[in-house]
Picture: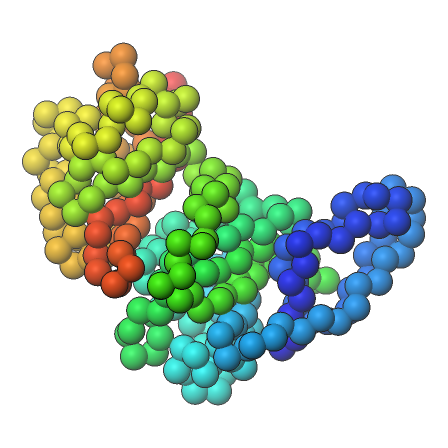
Length: 278
Protein backbone atom coordinates (compact mmCIF):
# COMPACT_ATOMS: atom_id res chain seq x y z
CA UNK A 1 0.00 0.00 0.00
CA UNK A 2 1.46 3.34 -1.03
CA UNK A 3 1.02 6.30 1.25
CA UNK A 4 0.82 10.04 0.91
CA UNK A 5 1.69 12.35 3.77
CA UNK A 6 1.01 15.98 2.95
CA UNK A 7 0.81 18.91 5.31
CA UNK A 8 -1.51 20.64 2.84
CA UNK A 9 -2.25 21.13 -0.84
CA UNK A 10 -3.74 24.31 -2.31
CA UNK A 11 -5.19 25.04 -5.72
CA UNK A 12 -3.53 27.67 -7.92
CA UNK A 13 -6.29 30.06 -6.82
CA UNK A 14 -5.18 29.61 -3.20
CA UNK A 15 -8.07 27.50 -1.91
CA UNK A 16 -7.03 24.78 0.58
CA UNK A 17 -8.02 21.44 -0.94
CA UNK A 18 -6.65 18.94 1.55
CA UNK A 19 -4.48 18.59 4.60
CA UNK A 20 -3.23 15.47 6.32
CA UNK A 21 -2.55 11.83 5.60
CA UNK A 22 -3.79 10.00 2.51
CA UNK A 23 -3.04 6.76 0.70
CA UNK A 24 -3.24 5.11 -2.73
CA UNK A 25 -0.99 7.25 -4.86
CA UNK A 26 -2.31 9.83 -7.30
CA UNK A 27 -5.40 11.90 -6.50
CA UNK A 28 -7.53 14.23 -8.59
CA UNK A 29 -9.45 16.94 -6.75
CA UNK A 30 -11.71 19.55 -8.33
CA UNK A 31 -11.52 23.00 -6.77
CA UNK A 32 -15.02 24.21 -5.87
CA UNK A 33 -13.88 27.82 -6.09
CA UNK A 34 -12.37 27.99 -9.60
CA UNK A 35 -13.18 24.58 -11.08
CA UNK A 36 -9.52 23.63 -11.67
CA UNK A 37 -8.73 19.90 -11.61
CA UNK A 38 -5.75 19.40 -9.28
CA UNK A 39 -3.58 16.31 -9.73
CA UNK A 40 -1.47 15.19 -6.77
CA UNK A 41 1.29 12.79 -7.73
CA UNK A 42 2.44 9.63 -5.99
CA UNK A 43 4.59 10.02 -2.90
CA UNK A 44 5.80 7.02 -0.97
CA UNK A 45 6.68 6.82 2.71
CA UNK A 46 10.35 6.16 3.31
CA UNK A 47 11.83 3.99 6.04
CA UNK A 48 8.75 1.76 6.22
CA UNK A 49 10.63 -0.44 8.70
CA UNK A 50 9.68 2.28 11.20
CA UNK A 51 6.10 3.08 10.17
CA UNK A 52 2.90 1.43 9.00
CA UNK A 53 -0.61 2.21 7.91
CA UNK A 54 -4.03 0.99 9.08
CA UNK A 55 -7.50 1.66 7.66
CA UNK A 56 -10.36 1.33 10.17
CA UNK A 57 -14.07 1.43 9.33
CA UNK A 58 -16.77 3.07 11.42
CA UNK A 59 -17.31 -0.18 13.32
CA UNK A 60 -13.69 -0.15 14.49
CA UNK A 61 -12.63 -3.03 12.22
CA UNK A 62 -9.29 -3.01 10.37
CA UNK A 63 -10.11 -3.22 6.65
CA UNK A 64 -6.64 -2.68 5.19
CA UNK A 65 -3.03 -2.49 6.35
CA UNK A 66 0.38 -1.86 4.84
CA UNK A 67 2.88 -4.72 4.55
CA UNK A 68 5.00 -3.12 7.26
CA UNK A 69 2.06 -3.33 9.71
CA UNK A 70 2.18 -7.14 9.57
CA UNK A 71 5.93 -7.22 10.06
CA UNK A 72 6.12 -4.66 12.90
CA UNK A 73 3.05 -5.95 14.76
CA UNK A 74 3.98 -9.61 14.22
CA UNK A 75 0.84 -10.80 12.41
CA UNK A 76 0.75 -13.31 9.58
CA UNK A 77 -0.20 -12.19 6.07
CA UNK A 78 -3.64 -10.52 6.12
CA UNK A 79 -4.25 -11.70 9.69
CA UNK A 80 -4.94 -8.10 10.77
CA UNK A 81 -7.92 -7.75 8.44
CA UNK A 82 -11.13 -8.16 10.41
CA UNK A 83 -9.47 -7.46 13.77
CA UNK A 84 -11.02 -4.81 16.01
CA UNK A 85 -8.76 -1.79 16.64
CA UNK A 86 -8.78 -2.55 20.40
CA UNK A 87 -6.63 -5.64 19.73
CA UNK A 88 -3.93 -3.25 18.50
CA UNK A 89 -4.62 -0.36 20.88
CA UNK A 90 -6.04 -2.04 24.02
CA UNK A 91 -5.86 1.14 26.09
CA UNK A 92 -8.71 2.58 24.01
CA UNK A 93 -12.05 0.93 24.87
CA UNK A 94 -14.43 0.18 22.02
CA UNK A 95 -16.84 2.86 23.23
CA UNK A 96 -14.15 5.55 23.02
CA UNK A 97 -13.31 4.40 19.53
CA UNK A 98 -16.92 4.90 18.50
CA UNK A 99 -16.78 8.43 19.88
CA UNK A 100 -13.61 9.10 17.89
CA UNK A 101 -14.15 7.04 14.75
CA UNK A 102 -17.87 6.17 14.46
CA UNK A 103 -20.69 7.94 12.66
CA UNK A 104 -20.92 10.64 15.35
CA UNK A 105 -17.17 11.39 15.32
CA UNK A 106 -16.12 15.02 15.13
CA UNK A 107 -13.14 14.18 12.95
CA UNK A 108 -12.96 16.24 9.77
CA UNK A 109 -11.52 15.58 6.32
CA UNK A 110 -9.84 18.98 6.54
CA UNK A 111 -7.22 18.08 9.13
CA UNK A 112 -5.24 15.33 10.81
CA UNK A 113 -4.30 14.89 14.46
CA UNK A 114 -1.16 13.56 16.07
CA UNK A 115 -1.13 11.37 19.19
CA UNK A 116 1.67 9.70 21.13
CA UNK A 117 0.50 6.34 22.47
CA UNK A 118 1.34 2.61 22.63
CA UNK A 119 0.27 -0.10 20.21
CA UNK A 120 0.30 -3.77 21.17
CA UNK A 121 1.90 -6.37 18.93
CA UNK A 122 0.70 -9.94 18.38
CA UNK A 123 2.71 -11.12 21.41
CA UNK A 124 1.13 -8.55 23.74
CA UNK A 125 4.18 -6.29 23.93
CA UNK A 126 3.68 -2.51 24.07
CA UNK A 127 5.24 -0.54 21.21
CA UNK A 128 5.63 3.25 21.65
CA UNK A 129 4.20 4.96 18.57
CA UNK A 130 3.09 8.30 17.21
CA UNK A 131 -0.12 8.03 15.19
CA UNK A 132 -1.52 10.49 12.69
CA UNK A 133 -5.32 10.23 12.62
CA UNK A 134 -7.30 11.26 9.56
CA UNK A 135 -10.92 10.88 8.49
CA UNK A 136 -11.07 9.23 5.07
CA UNK A 137 -14.11 9.01 2.78
CA UNK A 138 -13.23 6.84 -0.23
CA UNK A 139 -15.19 6.81 -3.46
CA UNK A 140 -17.94 4.62 -2.00
CA UNK A 141 -18.51 7.37 0.61
CA UNK A 142 -18.36 4.90 3.50
CA UNK A 143 -16.67 6.43 6.51
CA UNK A 144 -13.17 5.20 7.37
CA UNK A 145 -10.34 6.45 9.54
CA UNK A 146 -6.74 6.35 8.41
CA UNK A 147 -4.00 5.74 10.98
CA UNK A 148 -0.47 6.45 9.83
CA UNK A 149 1.73 5.03 12.58
CA UNK A 150 5.37 5.86 13.27
CA UNK A 151 7.54 4.03 15.79
CA UNK A 152 8.60 6.36 18.56
CA UNK A 153 12.03 6.44 20.19
CA UNK A 154 11.29 6.96 23.88
CA UNK A 155 14.64 8.66 24.35
CA UNK A 156 13.47 11.29 21.85
CA UNK A 157 9.85 11.47 23.03
CA UNK A 158 10.36 15.02 24.28
CA UNK A 159 10.46 16.27 20.68
CA UNK A 160 6.76 15.47 20.23
CA UNK A 161 4.60 18.38 21.25
CA UNK A 162 1.43 17.72 23.25
CA UNK A 163 -0.25 20.50 21.29
CA UNK A 164 -1.39 18.19 18.49
CA UNK A 165 -2.77 15.69 20.99
CA UNK A 166 -4.69 18.47 22.75
CA UNK A 167 -6.14 19.65 19.44
CA UNK A 168 -7.34 16.13 18.70
CA UNK A 169 -8.94 15.65 22.12
CA UNK A 170 -10.55 19.11 22.02
CA UNK A 171 -12.33 17.93 18.87
CA UNK A 172 -13.18 14.46 20.10
CA UNK A 173 -14.60 15.18 23.56
CA UNK A 174 -15.97 18.04 25.67
CA UNK A 175 -13.17 17.97 28.26
CA UNK A 176 -10.42 15.77 29.66
CA UNK A 177 -8.15 15.54 32.68
CA UNK A 178 -5.29 13.39 33.97
CA UNK A 179 -5.14 11.61 37.31
CA UNK A 180 -2.36 9.49 38.80
CA UNK A 181 -2.60 5.91 40.09
CA UNK A 182 -4.15 7.18 43.33
CA UNK A 183 -6.72 9.42 41.66
CA UNK A 184 -4.95 12.76 42.25
CA UNK A 185 -5.35 15.43 39.59
CA UNK A 186 -2.30 16.06 37.38
CA UNK A 187 -3.76 18.09 34.52
CA UNK A 188 -7.05 19.53 33.26
CA UNK A 189 -7.94 20.77 29.80
CA UNK A 190 -8.88 24.47 29.48
CA UNK A 191 -12.45 23.39 28.74
CA UNK A 192 -12.82 22.17 32.34
CA UNK A 193 -12.63 25.75 33.61
CA UNK A 194 -14.93 26.96 30.85
CA UNK A 195 -17.57 24.28 31.50
CA UNK A 196 -17.34 23.85 35.27
CA UNK A 197 -15.44 26.85 36.62
CA UNK A 198 -12.46 24.95 38.01
CA UNK A 199 -8.95 26.38 37.57
CA UNK A 200 -5.76 24.30 37.40
CA UNK A 201 -4.98 25.32 41.00
CA UNK A 202 -8.33 23.99 42.19
CA UNK A 203 -7.76 20.56 40.64
CA UNK A 204 -4.04 19.79 40.67
CA UNK A 205 -3.04 17.60 43.60
CA UNK A 206 -6.67 17.15 44.67
CA UNK A 207 -8.32 13.74 44.65
CA UNK A 208 -10.85 13.12 41.89
CA UNK A 209 -13.19 11.45 44.38
CA UNK A 210 -13.42 14.61 46.47
CA UNK A 211 -15.51 16.18 43.69
CA UNK A 212 -18.16 13.45 43.88
CA UNK A 213 -21.22 13.29 46.16
CA UNK A 214 -20.40 11.39 49.34
CA UNK A 215 -22.96 8.72 48.46
CA UNK A 216 -21.06 7.89 45.24
CA UNK A 217 -17.49 7.82 46.54
CA UNK A 218 -17.31 4.23 47.82
CA UNK A 219 -18.66 2.68 44.62
CA UNK A 220 -16.58 4.97 42.39
CA UNK A 221 -13.42 4.18 44.34
CA UNK A 222 -14.12 0.45 44.20
CA UNK A 223 -14.52 0.61 40.41
CA UNK A 224 -11.34 2.67 40.05
CA UNK A 225 -9.30 0.28 42.22
CA UNK A 226 -10.58 -2.76 40.31
CA UNK A 227 -9.64 -1.50 36.85
CA UNK A 228 -6.45 0.34 37.82
CA UNK A 229 -5.08 -2.83 39.47
CA UNK A 230 -5.54 -4.48 36.06
CA UNK A 231 -4.32 -1.40 34.14
CA UNK A 232 -7.52 -1.55 32.09
CA UNK A 233 -9.76 1.14 30.62
CA UNK A 234 -13.34 1.53 31.75
CA UNK A 235 -16.45 3.58 31.11
CA UNK A 236 -18.79 5.48 33.45
CA UNK A 237 -22.08 6.06 31.66
CA UNK A 238 -23.32 8.68 34.10
CA UNK A 239 -20.87 10.33 36.47
CA UNK A 240 -22.35 12.77 38.98
CA UNK A 241 -20.18 15.49 40.49
CA UNK A 242 -20.16 19.16 41.50
CA UNK A 243 -19.03 22.24 39.61
CA UNK A 244 -17.19 25.14 41.25
CA UNK A 245 -20.50 26.63 42.47
CA UNK A 246 -21.58 23.39 44.14
CA UNK A 247 -24.15 22.57 41.45
CA UNK A 248 -24.57 18.94 40.43
CA UNK A 249 -23.24 18.02 36.99
CA UNK A 250 -23.60 14.84 34.95
CA UNK A 251 -21.01 13.52 32.52
CA UNK A 252 -20.15 10.43 30.52
CA UNK A 253 -16.53 9.47 31.27
CA UNK A 254 -13.93 7.15 29.78
CA UNK A 255 -10.88 6.26 31.84
CA UNK A 256 -8.00 5.54 29.44
CA UNK A 257 -4.80 4.11 31.00
CA UNK A 258 -1.59 6.14 30.77
CA UNK A 259 1.90 4.64 30.68
CA UNK A 260 5.21 6.29 31.42
CA UNK A 261 8.33 6.19 29.23
CA UNK A 262 9.18 2.73 30.55
CA UNK A 263 5.73 1.40 29.64
CA UNK A 264 4.59 1.25 33.29
CA UNK A 265 1.03 2.16 34.25
CA UNK A 266 0.94 5.72 35.64
CA UNK A 267 -2.76 6.59 35.96
CA UNK A 268 -5.60 7.62 33.68
CA UNK A 269 -6.46 10.21 31.10
CA UNK A 270 -10.19 10.76 31.61
CA UNK A 271 -12.21 11.85 28.57
CA UNK A 272 -15.59 13.44 29.22
CA UNK A 273 -18.80 14.38 27.48
CA UNK A 274 -21.39 16.56 29.23
CA UNK A 275 -24.80 14.95 29.67
CA UNK A 276 -27.47 17.56 29.04
CA UNK A 277 -30.25 17.42 31.61
CA UNK A 278 -33.73 18.96 31.24
